Amino acid sequence: MMSSLTRRFARAVPVALVLCLGAGQSSAGLFDDEEARRAILDLRQRIEALRADSDQKIADEAKRNAEDAAQLRRSLLELQNQLEASRAETAKLRGQVEQLARDLAEAQRKQKDASQLLEDRLRRLEPSKVSVDGREFFAEPSEKRDFDAALAVFRKGDFATAQSVFLDFLNRYPTSGYRPSALFWLGSAQYATKDYKDAQTNFRSLVQQSGDHLRAPEALLALANCQSELKDTKAARKTLEELIASYPSSEAASAAKDRLARLK
View (cartoon, rainbow, N blue to C red):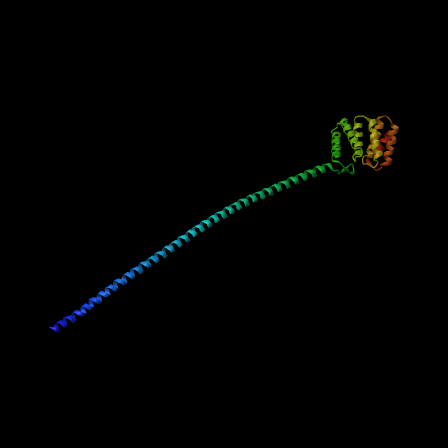
């Protein structure tokens, strides 16, 4: 009996011990799971906190980057505006420089034209060297113009008008280098209109004032003709003799010899 009980007890004790031990282990297991859950929850909270902090930092950084980018865009836009303004100002200045260059060129051209015009006017007013009847001298432009105009009238055969213009010329230019020639043509115009008295006066004036003039021999011959027309044969002969003696090699002297022979 005892042995059976003992055997039963012996069998029961391990089972009880196992049950007790199992119960203890179960309690310990339950305790460990709770700690693990709390640890996990705590870890999760930390992770969430870290994630939230990281997200916040990322958001802040993104915000700062966005602000920096916006500021950079504003700076770039402002710089671009400044560059455009600078280009516009440069273009304006270039245009002004080009306009100034054109204005300067135009002013220089006008100044050159004005200088040329002034030079031309002064040249027209300045005396120039002329050569008339073998003589060279300086004459005013108006002086030359008036003499040429008077001589043109004579050559047209308008002797009455020629007298007037040559007298006017001699009065306006009393010391002119044209004077001997003007006296000759004046006397010739007067001779052509049969004004022998005034003609001989002007021919004589030419010889007395400019005895070496190219027209002097012709003037003496014309003077002798005037005296012949006035029936002053004695004076005419004397004048022809004077011509032959003073200008023996001249063509007028040859003509004077023929006339002198006829007068005898």
